[in-house]
Length: 146
Image (cartoon, rainbow, N blue to C red; front, side):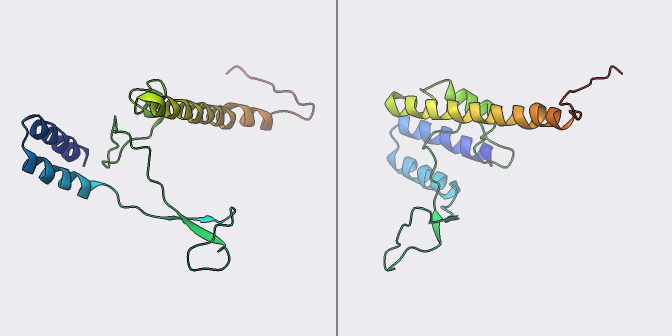
């Protein structure tokens, strides 16, 4: 629940400001319990990574996605950090929101590339490919004004 997380974050800020160490640890523990658990994704082991205790690479391996370590700027209705186009754009255009410093600048550049690729994919799927399918045998598109 995003409201619960935001409420706990505000309580944590107040407790830290007032130097209430025990309360800070308690709230921090609550926040950590709300964090998503690490869940592996099965991916093809194209790199040929050999798992400890094995002699040859397995066909598939576990992939863990940890995230960028950024503080969410918006939450979805289900309480997870939002990753919509407007959020990606906001992070891409502000290195401070993307972590600050060199890492923030690098994260911002990566997010800009992700946003650009997403925009290109949307344009291809929405406009260009459907128009190509509408072409006649000579490759021409005929519009109609209704």
